Amino acid sequence: MRNRTRAGAVVLTGLCLALGCGSPAFSQTVQKGEGMSKHATGTFEVKLSPQATAEKVEGLGRMSIDKQFHGDLEATSQGEMLTAGTVEKGSAGYVAIEWVSGSLHGRTGTFALQHTGTMNRGVPSLSVTVVPDSGTGQLAGLSGTLKIIIADGKHSYDFDYAIAGAP
Image (cartoon, rainbow, N blue to C red; front, side):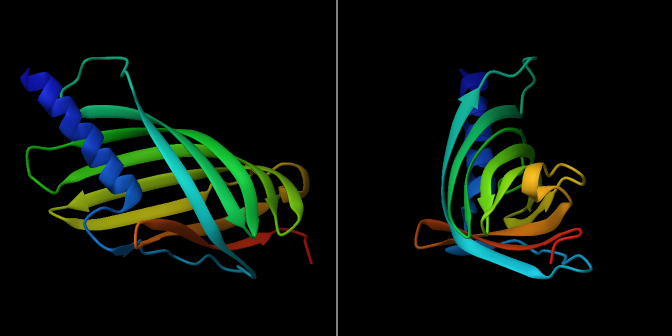
């Protein structure tokens, strides 16, 4: 029973990190890259589903990610998240990769987003960046950082980006 309780806590921890629990308007610190000239905003819905891990390791969790973006980015994404819970309440970490497919300001293609999140005794830190050279189609050459904002239970994004060679 202890492992089942621990697994539930890990899933909850991952969910909280992904959704910004603990703060009514969580947003992560983002480093703007050089040459970021475009800006996209909008909303999104996310569904996280617990998955089995390859090994039975206490504190380790895994989830699938399914998102629908609206606004300047009209897209869907699928991804995977790994979480690590600790015995210290309010401390945990997660990493995730998601593939995004759709259009960004009318340009169609796909690209990957990489998430790195930590919660240090209740203080969140999150970085979401475009994986270099992951853009395809009209999004080839895409780079940037995405900020996740959660306010009043609603999710939105703020995306600073550039496309190499694009006007």
